[in-house]
Image 1 (tube, rainbow, N blue to C red):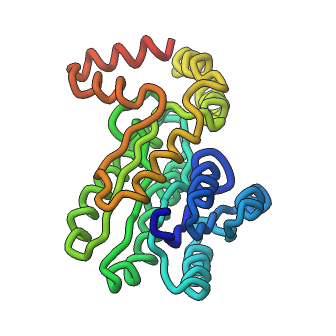
Image 2: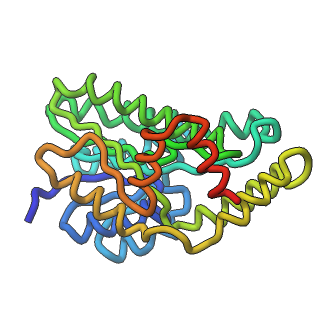
Length: 270
């Protein structure tokens, strides 16, 4: 069996986070799942893992979660920064307060969790930080400016961090899922309709809502498997891409001129 590690997975109440926590427990690691909805993490406890109340938009909650694990286990070997959500709607329509909160959770919450675990990792000169980005950190879609901005930021942040921490023996890994069946599409459609279904962006909003049908995409287990491989690797890759369209759309983004890729995206959105 691979070396047993102490792992914290944020956003572990559903989707990729829940699947990842269960996969890592099954592989024999000491796993702590953190999320606001602790009841939804019952499967983690049933499998032999641990759960913590964790809100990555709240300083006291983040500090308490990390301190609890350090008190119990003495270390955190791996941080899987999975917590996040998406705000969709036309830039003109989305309130700036909502946009700020998007960054607070998707970027600043991720960064603060890293700050909290780094002193111990640096002292031991070992550790792995896995930041869950998205193919949305490379490509883009209409009415998704705020969400894509956070994921582009996570990619740049992670690249800089990787260089900073290499001398301390700490790996920084980006996992960029493609389309994953986590309920994201259903929420996206609802958000777009709420923000921009009326007014100048109504036609575009309808096209995106129609294209965002529930049940599409790869299963979260696909990404959980990728994360487990990164955890087990002696020298993990700097980036992992997996899930429906994750390679195809990134390839097209790199190969096509901007305006041609714009047209590809618009056609896909109906």
